[in-house]
Amino acid sequence: QAVAGGLTDPTAMALATIDEAGLPWQRIVLLKDLSEQGFVFYTNLESRKARAIAANPRVSLLFPWNVLERQVIVGGTVERVPMAEAARYFLSRPRESQLAAWASAQSRPLSARQVLEQKVAEMKHKFAHGEVPLPGFWGGYRVVPQQIEFWQGGAHRLHDRFLYTRVDDLSWSIERLAP
Image (cartoon, rainbow, N blue to C red):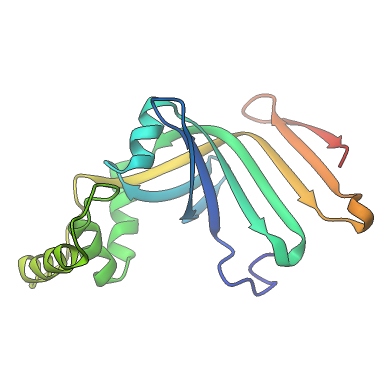
């Protein structure tokens, strides 16, 4: 419905993690696959989010579809996507995005933008011929949901909220929540 509603980026989701010091942090990532197993996104495996996930694999996702007066909130645990799956996705990305993945030491301090641009130029030269290979420091994560809340805005703040909680691999309990 978010795609059909013409939202600018319906796959944008806020990912909330808690780092090794207990500090919560949020950032926008893009949903790249959705299945019964969970919600998949890709990133640098040495990034701040990856370090936080290593410290605490429990995360939350938020799809803020404000134009539709809807949001979906997912709470679950993270598992790594198999490298073959990550490689398939990486090779489907635009070449410039592949080169950027190689060039960026994501979340690390950068003295100047020119340093990043120089690194991109180096990667263009290095991989001038043939496909850009999957970096060993790049991959995907799957958020395996334990709870999913569907929120629909309502008149006078009488919203509809439904919380799905995983009972086992095949079933969910459903509760209506007060707004």
